[in-house]
Each structure stands twice: as structure tokens, then as C-alpha cells.
Image 1 (spheres, rainbow, N blue to C red):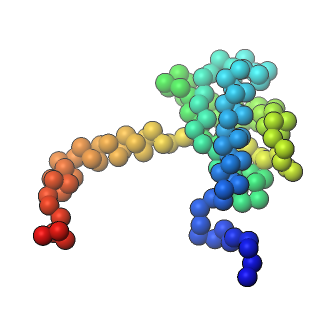
Image 2: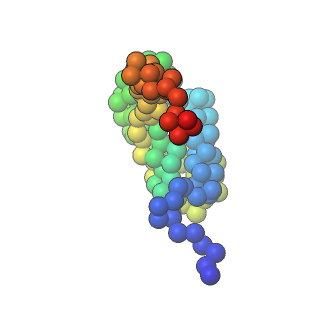
Length: 138
């Protein structure tokens, strides 16, 4: 029996999660310290919410959001994409990986999903259903 895990239908591996978190921290530190030589990017406050990696660790999808809506998320993604090479170099200098992952920036929609969930829970119909006793327990 093989000790290797198949990745079909399963969530990310522990290695993907661990490396994703290391990349997230590294990018957050680099952006926080304004180490990139782009005044437009350094003027933005950007939060890195999550980094998800491909199974071979060669592609990192970075979910970002400007803090408090200071700039449109599209502008932040354009600025990050413009400086992708320098950011990738900083990540590879911090981590000991065989390959420096290609960075792809996407808007972080976590807060939008939270707002939608709150809106759904405040709906009177949902409140009524939540307050009703379960039929299975009767």
C-alpha cells in the first residue's frame, strides 16, 4: 500500500497549508515594511488574507484586500501584479523551496461572504426557522 496521498477530492495538504501561511506572513511583512521600490504600492495599506498553493507548490494564489477601502481592490491588485517579480524574489529569499512560486493576486471576498451570511441570518424567515423546534427531537 502506498503511503502517498492522492489529492483528488481532498483539501489542501499540510505542506500546502504550511507553505501558504509562510508566504502570507512573508508578503505581509514585506508590504508592511514598504520594501518594494514602488511609491504607489507603498502608499497602500494592503492585507494579505490567505495564500492557497497548487499541489506542486509552483503557483500561489494570494487573496488581498486594501485596508478600510482606502483604494479600490483592482488598483491594489494592479500594483501588486506590476511588482510580482520583486515580491516573488523576496518570498524565495525568505523560504527554502525548490521553486519560487508564481504569485497570482485575487480579491479577498471573505468579508463580503461574512456580510452576506449576516444578512441571511437576520432575514425574518430564517429567524423563524431557527426558532422553531426540530421535528426530529419531538
